[in-house]
Length: 246
Image (cartoon, rainbow, N blue to C red; front, side, top):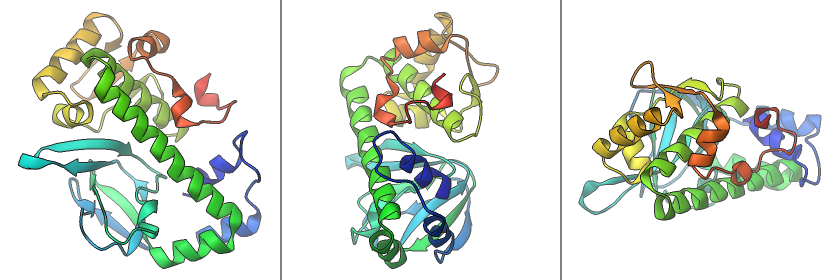
């Protein structure tokens, strides 16, 4: 979390960097670390919020359940992500956060988050920045669902996941293991699992990806996949000279 928030303070549009006292204050936040089993809930919709949560290891999804019990995944989260910073100020959760893999999660009392945000302005600004970037990602996912065809939706998702893995230091952008099943991918892209399978095969047939297993993704030409997915990393608001963009 410290690394993620400090990352925003080094962006070209940010007004200041973390001081040693800022990092120390973050590290001293009271917290409880819990291991959450695969498919376990970190946040449940309609529950009263008492903590904000940081993913220390593993992968999780943020999702909504609509009429008939159908699920729409609205974002994927990984190590370092503060998955529900908004819950520091909103009293009731309006979404679910559920693990894709076994996760180690730090639960930080919301009152301590709020106090730190107001007493350490650099930290508060970084938290605000992080929440604004979440909003940017949500907007891009809405555009992906509403205005791109199936192949572009899938290519866009694979590009986002690969780039975020590399920025987080969790893998190479062109060769990684998806922690998601085809059902999860369907709930990310608004497709059926059968359509997801066909779309992945179409990406393979076009030589945009190869798969050694059902979960592995190897990207031969990242730019071609990005072009197919209408992918522009601007919405992730990475630093201008971010090495992962090279």
